[in-house]
Length: 305
Ligand SMILES: [Zn+2]
Image (cartoon, rainbow, N blue to C red; front, side):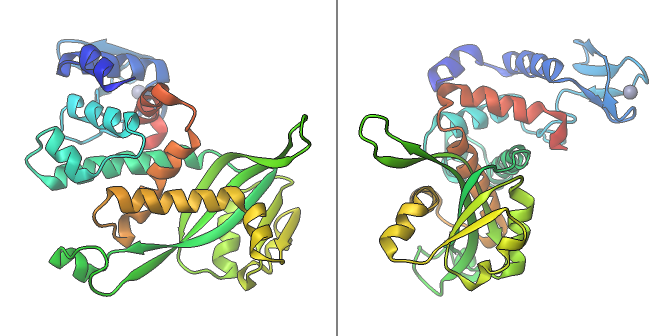
């Protein structure tokens, strides 16, 4: 959906309510008392659902990412369209300005709830087959920088470690015989430390099956061979490392450009949420205008709670 279409389809709160109600019915409504998806009746006067089995009532937002939020559905939907229709993303400050929210904190909390939701959605997916793995450092703001609202680069720097994995399938051009690699799904996670314990934990959580894992030579990777089928360590020059870890390195450079370009200050605490948003969009890079619908599906899906 484009921003123009959004304005046509969702001009007010009522049109958003109808859409969210229908989306929830399509996704299935989980009753918190019955602890399962049950048939629900809709009461349009009071704008609530009622479980057909136990009669528990729940609001339109209950059981979704919007639960307990006083923000209107229209504002939530505006956040979904801004975050999905812009390729690079949207800063909280920009969102606050565009939808005229009086408090920055409101925009901040709302957008981070959506980013956390994106992470939950992607956590359902496990990487398979051939996978490139590497880690990188991302600059995060220190408490002092946040407090004094210093410009980037001023004061002491802090680097956070991020694990990055990408599915990478070898391809051969049938005409030229030239070998290349096609990339699939990505995973990025803040890594407390780059040692074998932390790396192995990331691999166990995100990678499954008979995989071939490509990494560079790092002492933190020595035990990987115990948990994956095949571990291939590139030990030669920089050119072949860049060739073998092509997609993971592309992902890292795009991530850094994205984070530096949009957000004024990223703290360690919220870094994972920014990674979630970046990876969520990267993994759905071919979805185009359907990304908005995907966000709505994720937002009303019962698993988000
Ligand atoms: Zn029930």
